[in-house]
Image 1: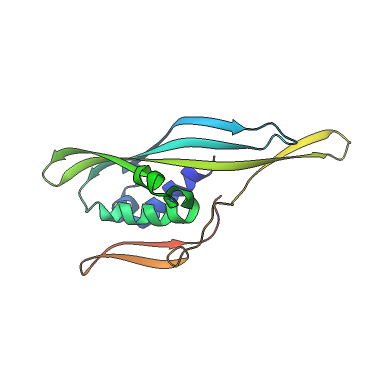
Image 2: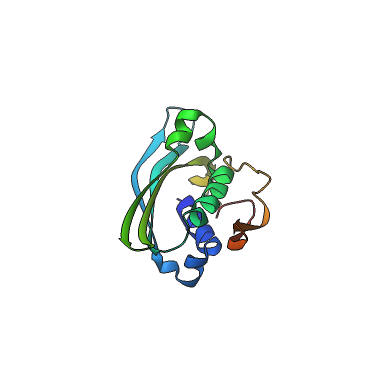
Length: 166
């Protein structure tokens, strides 16, 4: 699975609190399954829920939500293509710890398509090779380039997004 690592790296680079202390972001993959169909190949899809836990967060929730949505619109755009899915696309829980201090848990469902191709090696033995398809990449006006997120007149977060995962 490549998307959890790519998402974590993206958020760690975009959110100022994670730039200074990336260990405050914990990530778990839960509820995963493999979806394979009868056919000519062993190609399949991973489907799973990523749970991001941001510890001791003191900033505005927009600082994590906007970069997360930018990444999801680029790499998991189908989450937003109908009203019912969009309503459940990003779920969160907040645990207040003190004034202006929270633990934030965010859940999002991700998929990864894997193509399995057959071949032969130099000795003539049969081989199977996997490759993760990048078919979910969906460029938007904010998906490539340098971006700065402003909260009012203050810079809140910055990121650079380019095509590709892995």
